[in-house]
Image (cartoon, rainbow, N blue to C red; front, side, top):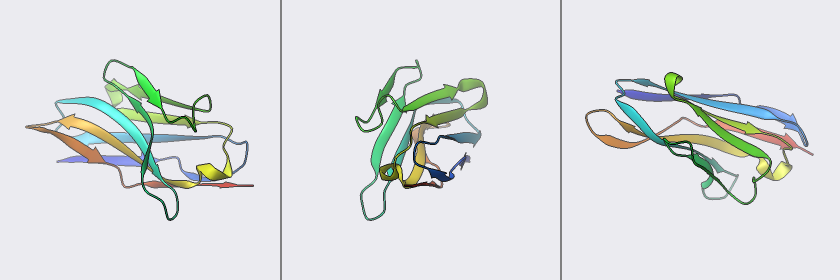
Length: 118
């Protein structure tokens, strides 16, 4: 059984920074791609950033230059460093990992609220 636990959300003023973490635990053989998604109030969930097992990254245009995704394979953890936060970054942030156990499938975190005040 695999579980993803997120931490690091909260309330911050515009221009501030937050760092999100998402740690996977359980009977894990390997973790492939990892990513962060967000769902603003009343909107659909969208990709924020992704990172492959080889370390290649991709970002939504809206966060390029402000957010950085990274991973620690030894800790089965993915991070999202968010700088220069804007009110439009307010959303519930979810991590997702492609994890191999006896089979391979995607797992989601429970979500963490990020609120940016103006």
